[in-house]
Figure 1 (cartoon, one colour):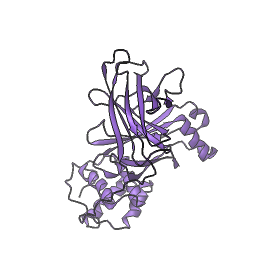
Figure 2 (figure 1 turned 120 degrees about the vertical axis):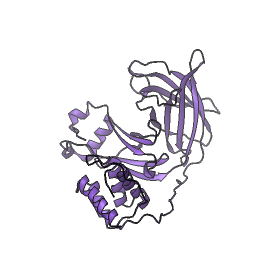
Figure 3 (figure 1 turned 135 degrees about the horizontal axis):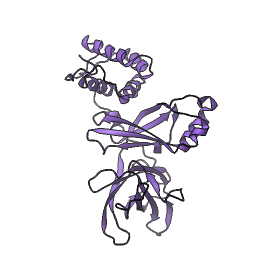
Figure 4 (figure 1 turned 45 degrees about the vertical axis):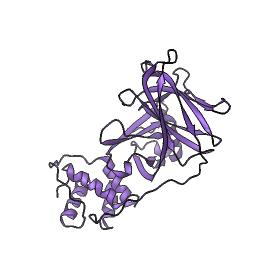
Length: 331
C-alpha cells in the first residue's frame, strides 16, 4: 500500500490498519496459530496482530494494527533512507500451533448489578506462566456473539490471597478514559510473579467516540498461573499421496511472491503444470472462469512461505485449490 514515511507525517498518524482475509480451512492461518508480523521487513510487536475468527463465517481475519509509536520505531530501525520509500509492505510468517487457556464472564451494570449484553473472553498461551510476559487476548462480544468494536475498557489484576491490586491499566489518554479495542479484540502483555490464582476485573466504560454506555459494565474472572517455560505443541499433518509438487516449482512460487513475475504468468504456469501432471493436487471442481479475478494476498503469502519451506506441500496445494474453485486458473 502507498504510505508516507516522512517523520512529519508519522507524528500525525495514530494507527495504520490493514487486514488479510483467508478461508478457515487454510491451515497456516487457522485459529490457534501464532504469527510473526513484519512491516517493511521489520518485525512488529505481537500486539499489532489480531486474529478475528468471529466476524465472517468461513473466514479468518488477521488484522495489522500498527500504532504511530510502532511506525516511529520502524523508521528509526531503517534510517533516513526509508523516509522516501512511499509504500508499506506487510508480511506474516506462521509459527507453531498453541493450546490456549481461556474463560468467559458477563458484565453487570455497576450500580444496579443487572447483567448487560457484554461477554468478555480472556485467553492466553498455556506455555506461559509465572514470571513470563504473558500476552493476554481480551475479546468483547455483544448478546448476539458479535464483536463489540471501538470499546473503551480498563482492567485490574488482583492477588486472590492478599486482595492487593498488582497491576492495572485504564489507558494512558487523560482526555479519553480506557484502552481502545477498535476491533473488539485487544492484547495486553502482563507479567504475573507467582504460581497462584489471580482475579482480573474488567470494566467497559463505553463504546465509540460518544462513550455509548449500552454495553458498559464490570465483571471478573480467575486466572490460574502455572510454572511457565513449557514448550509449544506442534503438529505435522500426515502426508497426502494425492499431492506431488517438484521442488523446482518453489522457485516460481518465490519469484511470484516477491513480485518478479505477474499474477497471470504465475496462474498460467500453474495451469500448465497441473494439466501436464507436473503438479498433482486433490481433485477440485473448476469455478466459473474469471479472467479479471485478483489473486488474494494470502495466496501470495502462502506461495512465499512454501518457497521458504515454512509450510507443507498440503498447505500450498490448498491455495492452488482455492484458485481453481474461484476460476482464477482452469484445469
